[in-house]
Length: 174
Image 1 (cartoon, rainbow, N blue to C red):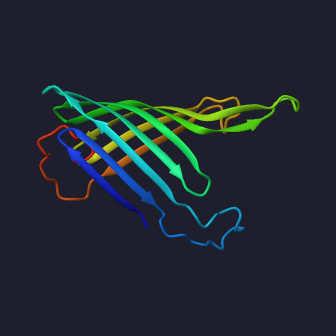
Image 2 (image 1 turned 90 degrees about the horizontal axis):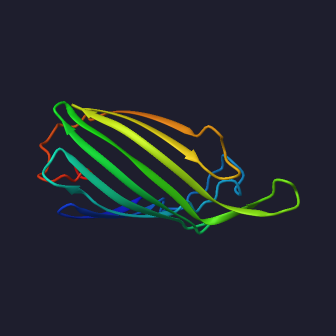
């Protein structure tokens, strides 16, 4: 069960969410591999700058805390939107940094520490009821999961009845 709360005022927004509030014991794996406490808390805030043009800019911050391990990370984001005659183009850049470090050794003698760090550019298009997006995440640490990064392609369709946009450049609620 998740619970969230959002606040909007003009082009400012703030969100608070608690995910996986109810602990669940899973019998699929060893109990140590999948802890029963999967709770995660998220807080994000941002502002949409639009000067009555077809362009808008949205800087935002996301803070995450995983309760069981006390892991914390922060995302710094910048999104750009361009309204065109057939829909909306958007793109941006996200930077994620973990507050915790992980120790490792590459030669067996010297112990080093690193923090999880990602840089993620993304682009997309909203066309009628369709949404197309592409994301590439690159982890830049000494020890990484993959040297090639991670690609994600998203294709979405809005099955709901289309309603008119609110009179704001607030992409989080439209």
